[in-house]
Image 1: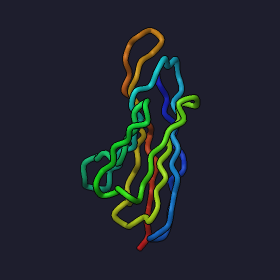
Image 2 (image 1 turned 90 degrees about the horizontal axis):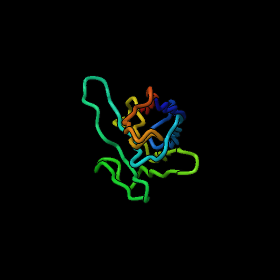
Image 3 (image 1 turned 45 degrees about the horizontal axis):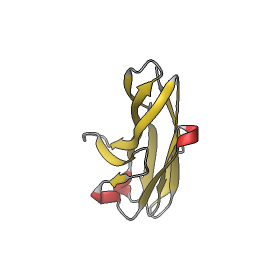
Image 4 (image 1 turned 60 degrees about the horizontal axis):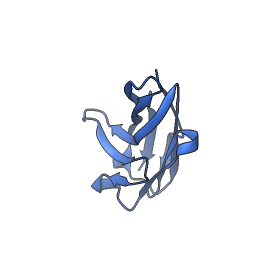
Length: 120
């Protein structure tokens, strides 16, 4: 089983910044893609950004130029630096990771979510 523990959410004013972190633990042999999704009340969960093991990144159009995703493979940790936050960024942010165990079984796991609230 893989555990993803997120941190860094909170309340910030419009234009503020936050940095989210997510660390994966367990009998992990390798992690392919790590990413962040978000879900606002009444809306579907959507991809914010992800990054593969080679550092290739993918961003939602709504966050390009404002958010930066990065990872530390040695620590099984992914980060999301969020700048110029807008009230529309208010949501629960979920970490996601997929990869393989030492048993060669695959995994695709989610964190418990961290609340990000941007006040207008």
